[in-house]
Amino acid sequence: DAGVIQSPRHEVTEMGQEVTLRCKPISGHDYLFWYRQTMMRGLELLIYFNNNVPIDDSGMPEDRFSAKMPNASFSTLKIQPSEPRDSAVYFCASSLTGGRNTEAFFGQGTRLTVV
Amino acid sequence: SQQGEEDPQALSIQEGENATMNCSYKTSINNLQWYRQNSGRGLVHLILIRSNEREKHSGRLRVTLDTSKKSSSLLITASRAADTASYFCATDAVTGANSKLTFGKGITLSVRP
Image (cartoon, rainbow over all chains, first blue to last red; front, top):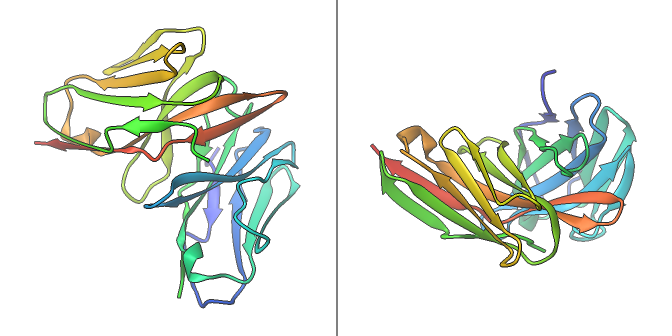
């Protein structure tokens, strides 16, 4: 397996534009996590899915953020409208059991810059 | 909110020395994991220790867990320049049927050649 695949690797967009980040988890993994990493706040859990169902979205900063997982092999994180404070590295990770005695595998991340 | 908090925030040592990093957490856990992140890359899993374990080894890594103090430590022995990276602890908190992996802010380790 190629691992967790995220796209794009880099995204530069203007304030107010819609941004869509994509993730393909490892085949067979039941859990998918979206994290955001900044210097100030570290690695924050935004939302996670179990078998394509959102379980906990309490980390989503506000209504401008939404995430979907239409099938087991694809997830999106959308920001609409984007703001400069959304600039960060966004990571997707997947695991067999969500961390319950198994490891999470991370993608390479999407570096988002909102100007 | 952050579950784990690492200490120190930054550590600089000479190659060959041992590096000790600590993590404290707040709630009951199923397990605690340590990850490594090289600059500009994703996180990579290093080692997992279950809540009923007290110590675990993997190569030059040694992890301890004290559930009574809600703390863990990661020891890297005989450090190498290639160990330079950020290190994170992650906790799998007890949340009923589901499992939620949350991370601390990380420790920046610099190993001088």
